[in-house]
Length: 332
Ligand SMILES: *[C@@H]1O[C@H](CO)[C@@H](O)[C@H](O)[C@H]1NC(C)=O
Ligand SMILES: *[C@@H]1O[C@H](CO)[C@@H](O)[C@H](O)[C@H]1NC(C)=O
Ligand SMILES: *[C@@H]1O[C@H](CO)[C@@H](O)[C@H](O)[C@H]1NC(C)=O
Ligand SMILES: *[C@@H]1O[C@H](CO)[C@@H](O)[C@H](O)[C@H]1NC(C)=O
Ligand SMILES: *[C@@H]1O[C@H](CO)[C@@H](O)[C@H](O)[C@H]1NC(C)=O
Ligand SMILES: *[C@@H]1O[C@H](CO)[C@@H](O)[C@H](O)[C@H]1NC(C)=O
Image (tube, rainbow, N blue to C red):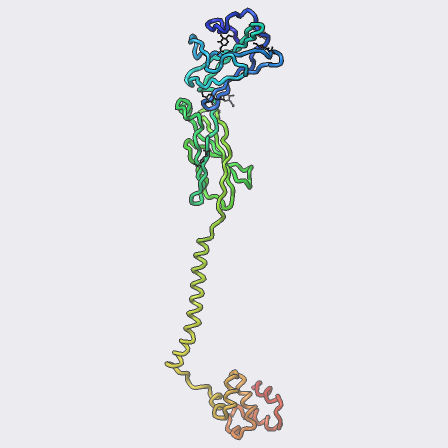
């Protein structure tokens, strides 16, 4: 809010006798990356017909000059991106009312190195490798200017989260541009954003856009292969077993013929073919009973072994074929 410097050199500030009622207020430089916009507020309703002119000086005693495109303008802003980030600047905005031929002016200082806002990282690349999520942060535009880049030990602050749980934010800081999130979940969308941060102090850049990636559904290929191998082994084993068993039995039958049949079966065999067949289908325990029972009609039943005699006798005594014989015989 100084009105002095205009007196020094600028012809456009000559004739400072009458002042415009009102000042360019809230004079400021919005410096993001290497774009610098000088802005101010003006009450156009109160003073509609005015023009502005901007002059700048970068150090005490240096000459004032007019940034390109900043003379006799009606807009309340001016692009001063041509400044050198190494210097500390003074900007003077003068307002001129041609009707009344009045001047007034405001002044502001700006130090690009300290006051520049570091813009957002220009890009984040998210790639999946071996179940890990790799995130590479691209420099902000500001770092194309080596002075700004080296002005501070910059680092990156990365925030990532799953869209399923957006409040659980995982924050990481790294001097390099590369981040890694281990063992990501399948079929999950991961999102990330980042900003730069001066490790020395509390200065931070702007947040990048949010970048997301969705992981692939879980792959069961390994399990499928292992499972298939197991199933194949089992199936092959079963087939071999089924095919080889009859063969084995056949071979055994050829090379090791069965020893003598049980005596009872042999007996039956002698008796009649019908009995023999019947005997074949009986268990050993039952054999005795049935044989005894059937042999009642047989003329050779007298030759049966001793242990069968009692039951046979009983059977003969009863004179019929009741099951009593069976029961009795079974109890023997
Ligand atoms: C500039 O405007 C302000 C506010 O209207 C006023 O107080 C001041 O006197 C003016 N400056 C000059 C040099 O006239
Ligand atoms: C603004 O000034 C121009 C001349 O400089 C004049 O032609 C115009 O009528 C003025 N407008 C108003 C609203 O005073
Ligand atoms: C701005 O206005 C001043 C005085 O009215 C004039 O001398 C100068 O040439 C003008 N500049 C431009 C770029 O119009
Ligand atoms: C300001 O000027 C720079 C170059 O000097 C240009 O790259 C940028 O786009 C301009 N910005 C605006 C808002 O006009
Ligand atoms: C960001 O990076 C990716 C991968 O390198 C690229 O495909 C994409 O076009 C980039 N986006 C921008 C806005 O530069
Ligand atoms: C940053 O730290 C400085 C002192 O180191 C302090 O004056 C300033 O208010 C802090 N700014 C923020 C945004 O915390």
